[in-house]
Length: 212
Image (cartoon, rainbow, N blue to C red; front, top):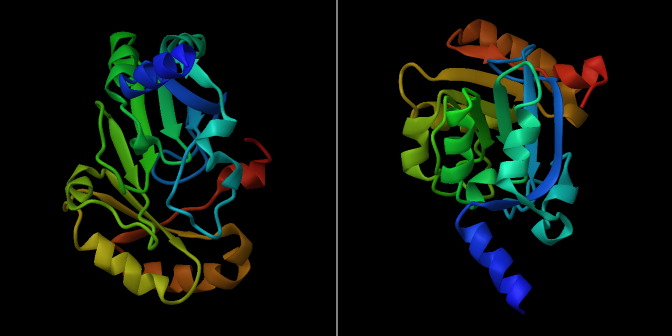
């Protein structure tokens, strides 16, 4: 019991996180696509997107609680001083400490989040990807540097506009086909972006490059 209570305390303080995986790669999606970064995928998510391609991340108990200092040291070994914290849903956790440690080492901090929880920490870039099952908190729209809408069907264009109306004027807007529907949705996205040029096309280029 003492170990479990200690882990719970460290988790609440943001000194440990349930780490699913960490790896150095090329960013594949959105505004920073093509740039190298260290990816940190935390376990735990209750948003429940039916098309999620990392459902194994949902159950936080399957992923070991890992000292944040260890995660930061691992990221600092690589030449690109940029990290992407993703999930799962990373905003479920206290991210003040980990972002503070990254900043102290001169590492840029990017996050990918549904915005369903209060966002903590200091971020250089916030990619907000809203989900219909658990919509973003209003405050998180104002923090978004990038809005990425996953297009699974024709109705998602209307959903995209509703979300775009809530972000700031300088937020970058992206439409990205859901991978399993890409062939069907891509022509619709192309036509939509050409007709509504405030939007940009995002692709999961890492899947084409066959990298994580």
